[in-house]
Amino acid sequence: MKIKFLELMKCPYCGFDFNISKIYREANEEILEGIIACECNEYPILDGILFLKINPLKKYLIKCLKEGQLNRALEHAVFNIGERACEFSAFFNSKGLFGSALGKAISIFIENQSMNDYKNNFSSNKTFTNLMGNNEYNIYLKNRFSTESLWSIYPFISILKENSDRILDLSCGMGHSSFILSTYVRPQQLVCADYHFRQLYINKRYFAKDATFICLDANCQLPFKNGIFSSLLMLDAFHYILERSSLAQEMDRVISSKGLLLLLHIHNSLNHNVGSGWALPPCGWLNLFQNMYVRMFPEWTVVEDYIYRDKLELTREYSIADLDSSNALAVIGLKNKSLLNDYNNVWQNYLKYKTNMIINPLYAIEHKMDEFVLQRRTASESFSNEFPLKESYLPKECTINRDIAKVIDGRAIYAKAPEFTERNIHYLDDLMRKFVILNVPQGYL
Image (tube, rainbow, N blue to C red):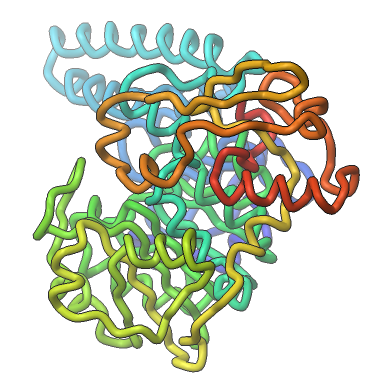
């Protein structure tokens, strides 16, 4: 947590500024382990990530830091069920002698499990895909770069670049959207916030290492002063917030007078969605925003305009029937209507960065002479059903020519763009347009 950024924050519970109570480890004006405080409480910083939730885990993390057990605090924060386990332990500890004994037993369990979890998953140099398991959710995460819900960000890169002073990636998850922002938009400062500490820790490790990370509850007030963000992105998350009306007001508050709000892959309650959350119909989502100019689009039209027609039309009007029939929606909120334009050649923002190219994990690779023949596999039946556009857009079979094949080791392409001829650059661009070749973070695969 950058010390300077604390000046732009306030406590989401009492509204007062933060002050630094103790720094245990720091580097380059960043607090790596420490404690900050306000008028109502104190909060831990672990591995540079600020923990801004009030619960039994927070108390335990503070206790560990004050006792000098920095590694134990981090292990507990990263432990996947640590928060719930600490709540159980605190509950039983308040229930007499028997409860206290049970609470102590749970505490010992937490100690052992969190240590083993961290040792098995994070103390080694595992890649992101190796870190993920093989249940349906993890299959989705490993292949998220091949989903139309994530593709919905790409056409908006142009407008995000016009508002890139400071960007908030709210409910950022493990970091796929954070990687896109940090790689293609390159804001002066990227702030990543999520409810789950573990996801932020993974995000920082693999996807957006230089961002500012805050663990918070988006159902509460946002811990930022007024108007500090030039853009706010929320992808596939708004429908999981119960206090949507309050959050809409908070998002309006923290965006600058010329700012941009981008809400992508919002579930529509009129249609089926996997994990629908607390979805609303299109008119319900629009009604949440009263103080900015808001436009809504069917997600499928935004993505298809991008992949097939290389454009983003922000001036296009959609009928109520168009919006009601779309299972997912995209919303753009503006305080300055002059930003509402149409954009052409929007693929160029994606294609210009070829920093860490790999062959899409969905493809099986077969060597034939000096070329590679790729066959698209099915990650899982539910993954295929949830993302039908991906099924029709990604080619079932394609060939990698020998000029590209000779610099491929496994799935990684070990050559930089300047090393290719102009012809092969166009060839790579075509494969990237089809998402056969992906640009991913270091350590992803």
